[in-house]
Length: 423
Image 1 (cartoon, rainbow, N blue to C red):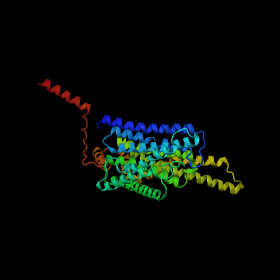
Image 2: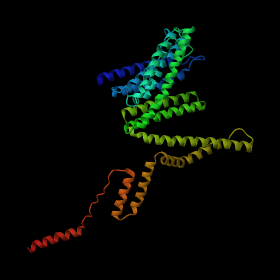
Image 3: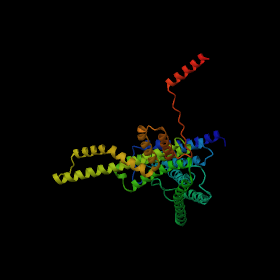
Image 4: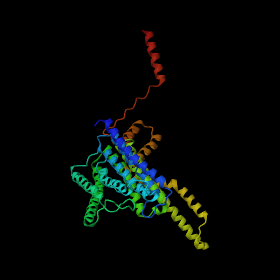
């Protein structure tokens, strides 16, 4: 397949996915004024979910058109198509059954058929991890896992058509099978789903194995993916701790979409190798400002709570004065810069020890450079600094000889002229 044909095919698949997502958004806008009953996802949550997954087909189209020989881009295109089908399933049924009954044909059948995109998503998800970033498995040992994933997906997709009920809204499946056969189908489908979830965990471990063996460019690519994975993992932990209730559903859903968008950006940068080596700086800043934010929030909440307790004990009033909040805010502002410097220094010493030592060595050499006048000793110091910081195989210093004073040059010229006259 030529690059032009591959690019056309990639962007065509991307366009199909984006059109399906656009259709979903149009249906959501048309039904926005209708309040959905219990069991349906709110229109707002459906719209935010579309925003969160719209990057998948775009990423797949970009990678597959630029690197058509790498299967990784085509995996993302399949993932994006699965997302596009899923995000259309519930809005279509909700609009046709609740907002405007009878306005769209076969809502229950469409809900079930479009919902099969979830099977595509969970089948391709292990390959998103297994094939990153080269498009090949880490080694031949992982072939068995790849075949197991394909077999589980092949069993789950057709059986999903006959499952009773639906995962996308309270919609009955017109093709659902009951009785003993239905129970058998449900059991097999559940087993296939569990196998795929286990495969996702094992595929994540494959990235650890790949990172231990990688070097150079591939290791930098894996760092980009790891950063996005840490952000998503942090979001999941925060969700389990109940922090979503503090932000509210709307803000939390936007944060969820933005976090998953970071995965698309990280994968795109890693595969296309655009500003690839900036990842070390980004990780450093993420560690610094993440720790700084946590500490400042803890100090702020602790300060406000302590002030409220003291004020309540002294005045027996429940409401806290506005002055306490203002004072806490000023304390946080005053702590920001010194605390950031301390955290930056700690992280540099703990995680970037080589760079930290090199910077300290250069600072010491700069201070000595201002006072040293002996060129030979300065040359030896320079060799030592370069050897310690850069660690080259060989170092040599070439110094220009001192230029001859201008008075000596004039004297030599005069002597030459005088000798010429004497002859």
